[in-house]
Amino acid sequence: MSSEKLETLKARLGEVSDIHSAISLLHWDQEVMMPPKAAPGRGQQLATLSGLAHRLFTSPEIGELLHDLHEGGTLTGDDAKLVSEGLHDYTLATKLPETFVQKLAIAQSSAYEAWVKARAASSFADFQPHLQGMVDLMLEKADHLGYENSPYDALLDEYERGMTADYLGGLFGDLAPRQSALVDRIVNAPNQPDLAWLDQEWDPDAQWKLSVKILKEMGYDFEAGRQDKSVHPFSTNFDITDVRITTRINPRDLFSGLMGSMHEGGHALYEQGLRESDRRTPLGQSISLGIHESQSLTWENIVGQSLPFWKRQTARLIKAYPGQLDGKTPEDLYRAVNRVQPSFIRVEADECTYNLHVILRYEIERALIEGQMKVSEVPEAWNAKVKQYLGLDVPNDAMGCLQDIHWSHGSIGYFPTYALGNLYGTQFLEAIEVALPNLWSDIEAGRFAPLLGWLRTNIHQVGRRMTASELITHVTGKAPSAEPFMKYLEEKYLPLYGLA
Ligand code: CO
Image (tube, rainbow, N blue to C red; front, side, top):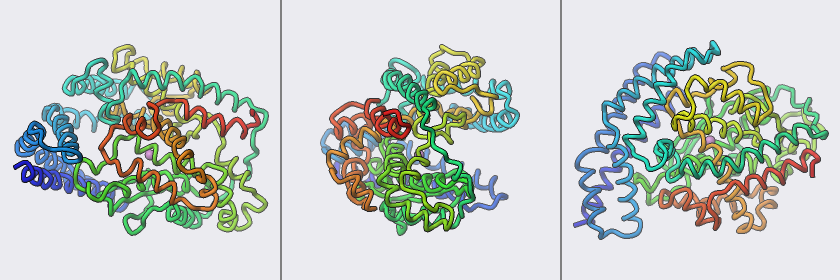
């Protein structure tokens, strides 16, 4: 009976999902609560649980159930989709030999240590052999996973399923010169804002309270989540009823804590909005990292850095920081939060320059994987691209090619998802503006429910029933493109800098 087998499969997959939730909770604790001496023990516990989850998931029982149900051909609709998604994950999980997984884990921990030291010393030469090792391992991984055109496709697929190096090349090849030209015009515009007033101390308590207030207005459910502080802000989830976020408050920065909370809140709203009936199954998961990032950027950038948003929030900020923002208008705050400034560090970059940081990383890692660039050539290539795209001279490797942790983990194919989030988010926005003609007046009134409702119906509730490209084409009528994002940037920033 296939219905019995399906119930058994769901029960087994549910167990694996529960272990993954426990792993995520231990990770949350590690970042937020754990005392420092607990680190080695925690590493052990995480390794044990990860091994257990992997063994359970790749067990012959689950394999047989998935194959029988898939090949039986009697399932339809969501049941068929659940099985095909489960089989996809199972096939991936069983493609990597255990010897490879162990070899990678060892290389990751020594590459990470070497990266920390090399960055502190600003010496790429110290990291170079480890990066070479990672590139070799990633090529081996791509061979295990299999690919048609480029080994980069196999790596990318893990983070952005269905996306290919060639398609990305088209998107980014279109975007990079146009975005770079726009940044150049902005930097040279005569109409530069005077933001000296931002240089003040902003009460951390007031920052925290504001972020909580706005998260509540966005629709983040504090009964099914919580906000804490951590060094690196993140969001994590154990179930739709427990989706947590963290933030980092910088007393010298009026905006970064609030925008960080809105960013993580956007990720969390996605996870809180997955379908109740999909819990503990592969369908009850987000589609891809790019779609996830589109949700965080919708709230942080599209909403949180819009003029209608600041028309409502400015009065609140004036009240929250007595005597510090007197006489400031919504337009002043809007200008300040949207300041454009090419910089060396990706995580500090503004919306207008951010993708350029991502695209140069993509170009370098793809060239490494496809054998068009040697690892020894990375610093020179990096510095040349920063000059080309951002007009800056990189002073040293720490501010350049050593700044990000990703390559030390072997996370190659990950960076593009950050830029895809921007492209997807603005492409969705075009559809949202058609569906919700009052979108901006609602935001000005602090009414976020219509927007959240649209995101829930059209994106969150889909779970893993479509790939990112399928979802975008389904919702917007067009394949993923760089056009909406460029249009969004130009419509926003040209008037801000007196260029239109
Ligand atoms: Co994010």
